[in-house]
Length: 340
Image 1 (cartoon, rainbow, N blue to C red):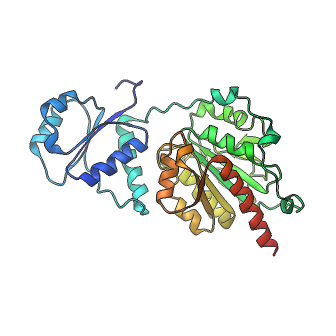
Image 2 (cartoon, rainbow, N blue to C red):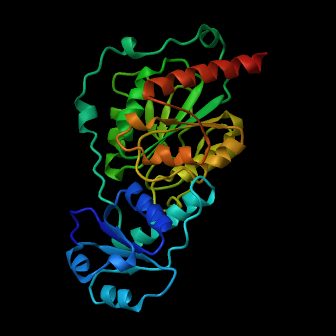
Image 3 (tube, one colour):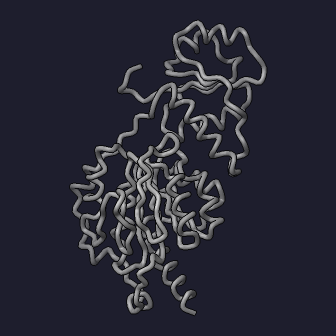
């Protein structure tokens, strides 16, 4: 298969609801959907004109003529995709992930282009004109050496620009440690540590073993290996790849953070492809944490925040500025309630 073009998927199913769900899974994860039809419409001309890298076939009843047509070509065929659960249920993101893994095993990763070059060249307004004001209740309060809040910033395609905008708005002095889980090429990780904090005050490092979550600082989850955390926020390197098809796995990051920090956990889902994170999102909310998401209209790609919204776990959606305002307000309210 040509390594340049984005993998192309053709769907044939005798269920209109299944075709809709499969199309959502294919396009949401970044593949090109070139055909999506019922079997009776797949004639010889359509078959000959369809340039696909895989056929995704889901049939309630066997159709020998259809199988003969498809098997006569050289394109791989995927059978046996189970019926899609109702969207919004906990089973749905797991079903979407299984579909993606099946496709990934046959045609590889979708071709997603993410460049940090525009962020390296942009010259924003002076930082002080961007930043929100730290509430006096926070600035006058002595911060605890204990981690008060841990905020996961989850992003994929289009995420770096949105995350940087969010960080640029934040005032210094927030008792929040930030952890970025960004789907990105491993060769671009070190560039992220420079680009995201240009023109703002937030120190940024790769989250390797021996590092620690600290108030007002940003750690980036590494692509190569899973990380976890001790009770005081020390990074524990697992020396094993992330579970699942994504690196770093947002689902695993959310699970690890919510298990360790519970109601002190916050997650913000930014622009991205696919639905990584929507499996563990409900677990974070059940542990007492909160999840917010970037609103669709401001995303370069809204698949990831939309997938989290469909779980019912997102309690607030907004643009990067509004998400920054929400975080400052949430922390201020939380500290006030703790002191009361």
